[in-house]
Image (cartoon, rainbow, N blue to C red):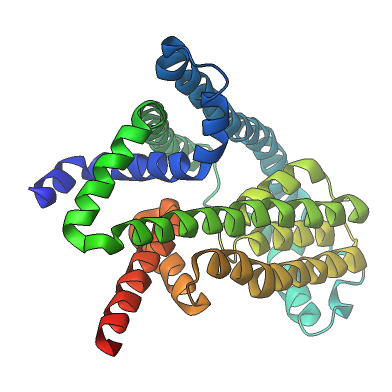
Length: 333
């Protein structure tokens, strides 16, 4: 029966998992809003609806802003490509003097961008027809994502409204399956999700803010957009380098070689500190899971479930560790 239900719900399973993760992560804050008034209308409709709308706006607003900025930046990118096709792109001064990689980058630049014919050959796959096909596929993907987002928000409302009743039912089922240890296992799952949210989301946003300071100091164009993008991608382990390395390439193209090298080095330093010290402490410490298992849960969750697997994976590892400890206690006894 359970397998049949999972099969039927598989197309919208990521949305349901997202709703569950958000409900668990935000429940302490929602409980405070829930207790503002004791009226039935407030606690059964107004409070969960208001809180759900606020959550939806907090999630949707940055995404909408990023979409608008990407649309604007796409025009600038196309203008840069057309300029390269027409007159080529001269080699930035000092590029070849960068340690270790400067010679290779300068060689690639001379081969592909200095001569307009080479630039035309490099960007031959970028044209109106290709962009039209890309727009169609992206449009379909956006529609699918919006649909999943709507399902997530609707499910989140019902989880807020009926969360207490659902929790009691799940604890009863857990007690029947795992025995008296079910409450402890549930606590580990909640702690794992809270620790993962703190370790991934909050640390990722902090990474974006710190690296964003470097963007402004380096004089990167559209530094605010890059700061937002870095914060979002930094939620994913090893995601932040995609943005600050791209920022480094943009600075190189404008001739700011020293600024580009310093920005990339600073970005890797921030990521190293966050990923090797802060995140292991927050995620593993909150759920009492060895960081190796946390890392396996993160990577396996992403591979199987996408972004939501970042939160589901450590929760499953928390269940595994709770059962492992329980069996170990029985064996010692």
